[in-house]
Image (cartoon, rainbow over all chains, first blue to last red; front, side, top):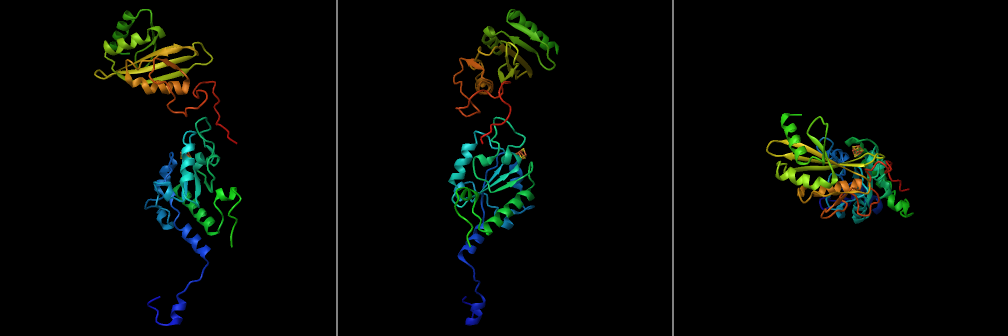
Length: 172
Length: 153
Ligand code: SF4
């Protein structure tokens, strides 16, 4: 850098990595979620960004109102039959690569709402990377899921939708 | 029931002697109205008795009894804060007259009852589904509708 006076000093300041690792690091450090609160679980999702839990430590506090600026969809709550096409459209509008967290019993399996109105698991509609159990899951649990997702990205594992398509095998 | 409610019920039964049946209730005066007289009764209730505020249309399915459905109307007198409930009993393939012409506020509640119970309101300006997707089959709050969730896989 400009402040290094000798060549030896300059070389000490260089960090070697691969482009891929660097990209993954950048990706996992700024996973921006799309706001998709559908029911009671959304309250816990909101509190995860508050000062008490402080999701900003992991770079995921910026909930985007537009799917085009989001990397992660947190499905927080029950998905009704009528909401399913909307959810799918929003997921399709998100730029790749994209990830999905299914938050809570309802999103993961329909929960107690085993009836005509609710989709029995959001994985019928979009491919899910991480499931969070609980009714509702605590903010800590959601944060744990986001940390798991970060691990997944760091390891170079493909997002679920690519995995299902048989693409994006683990590289390096 | 208060004295006032009893007076009201007396007045109504005198006005509609053949169409009304007073039923017991713990909270507010309640009558069952014959389907044929429902619209006239509603008009009277609004313009003469002053129940101008419409709250809700509810429905109950008494499957397998006949008549199967009970349509329940809730109205309020906004000055005396009196509530009033009237019901109409119909069977599966019968229709009730819509009260939208009397209380415009009945529009959406009637659509809700149509959507979830399949009750047909004759003369409703736009009787289409309100909650469920337009291509939905059946009426989910009927007692003979499956209670379990829809298995996609
Ligand atoms: S899992 Fe529980 S808290 Fe979450 S949406 Fe369902 S009922 Fe609400």
